[in-house]
Amino acid sequence: MSAEEHVARDRFAVARSLGNDDHSSKKETPQSKISRLLMITGRVILAAVAFSATVVLCLRWVPPPTSAFMLEQRVAGLFQGKRQPPIRYRWVAWKAISSQMPLAIIAAEDQKFPQHWGFDVQAISEAMEKNKQGNNLRGASTITQQVAKNLFLWSGRSYVRKGLEAYLTILLEVLWTKQRILEVYLNIAEFGDGIYGVSAAAETFLGKRPSEITKGDAALLAAVLPNPKHLNVRSPSPHVLERKRWIEEQMEQLGGVSSRICLLQMIVPSKALFKKLKSLNRR
Image (cartoon, rainbow, N blue to C red):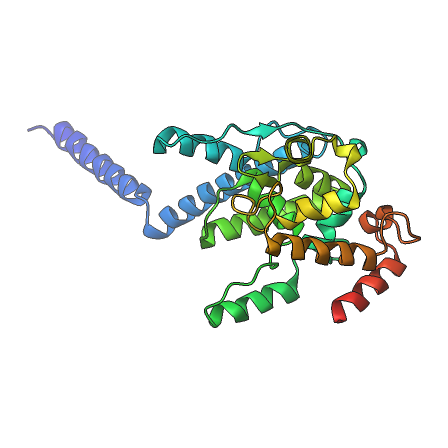
């Protein structure tokens, strides 16, 4: 072998060695893999946050065509082979709903609604204490939380669902007004088996338009909300009638729709309403 061939071979060996060193240096270390995974996860989370915020913001003005709970009922009917009652749902604007109805909902479901930012901390702590004792306490979920759950999520209990519910509750409180939260709740709440919204409930159970709902009608409809599949508006049980009377009393104590502390102040709270609600909650 000539001297030139030896030199060429040595140069090739050196180049190959350097190439192997570069290739080995390009191999991903565990730390780089973790960093890349975290970067991808962060981008996915940011995209999910942006998408969900956009949807929630759009629904501030656009009436929801359906809700997650309505879809769940339809899917359950298809896969379980059981005959489900037809879903009755028709959106009705805030101005076409009797002012007695949102007042009854606040009195029955969430009297701190004008004050909180989506969570009733006191009710949550009481519910946790009751759960430790093996009992269930109704009232820990605010109206905003119920809108988040009914509109976007599924039924059942899990830490994943509760976490998503908390996130969506914050979005609703930040991006919607209190009036919009109430308006959507009144339109998607289930008042009977397959009866969603105050419009369908008023027409089905009372033979009235939503604008014609009286104080007693509103209290009766609100009284079945804890368990609308079993509590009946047409044939109210003694328990429902007792709850109806209690709701009417709470509506009076909150000031009623014609008093100086009017419904508008309940949605855009005033200092006077804050003081009144605080005094009621201390009792």
